[in-house]
Structure formats: C-alpha cells, structure tokens
Image (cartoon, rainbow, N blue to C red; front, side, top):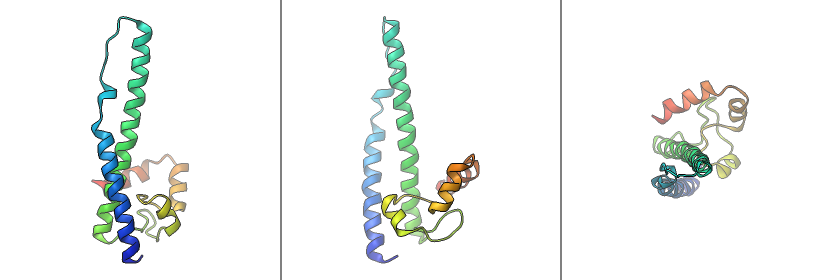
Amino acid sequence: MTKTELKRFRKILEEKQAELARVLRNREAIAIEKSADALDEVQNAAERELAIRNLDRESNLLRLVKLALRRMDEGTYGTCLHCEEEINPKRLKAVPWTPYCITCQELADRSDNAEFLDELMMNAA
C-alpha cells in the first residue's frame, strides 16, 4: 500500500472516528421517561431499546475504527487479523475499518463468531 493510499485511509478513518464520537455523546434517547399512560410507557421503552442498540452498534464501529488507526501506526493495516493475508484494496475502500479479508469475514458471519469476536476484542484492547 502506498503512502498516499495510507494517508487517504487515515483521513477517512479519523473523520469517521470524529463522527462516531459526536453520535455517542448524544445519550438523551436512552433517558428513562415516566408517563401516566401505559401505552406511552411501552412506546418509550421500545424507543429506548432501539437507541441502546444503535449506541452499541456505533460503539463497536468506533472500536473497529480505533483498531484500524492503531494498526496503521503499527504498520499492520491492510492485513487480515485472522489469516494474516493482505486485505483486498477494494474491500478497504468499501470498509476501511475492516479487520478481516472477505474470506475470513464470510467465515465469521457463518460461524458463531465467538472465536473472531474474542480475537478482535483482544486486538482492540
């Protein structure tokens, strides 16, 4: 990977990191609101659950972005964490924070994900 490509990916990742940090600061949607109406309570609980899931998803994405930036600093960006093969540049252009090549990602999606998630979280720590 050329230095120009690496700089371009770094810029994309840093912008995504800033965007996610802004989104994650907004936690008003998970505030517990009381209502006299039982139907409103159910609606509020459903909206809160959706907001929590969105925050969880965004938090996981932020971890992947930070891991990608750290891997850039270490010189291992663009290498699959599982098989250690080079990640296709087209895949990196589509998903610059991806830790896996397409083959390993497909395997992770088909499996119970435990092995991949454990490995990923160890690398993200």
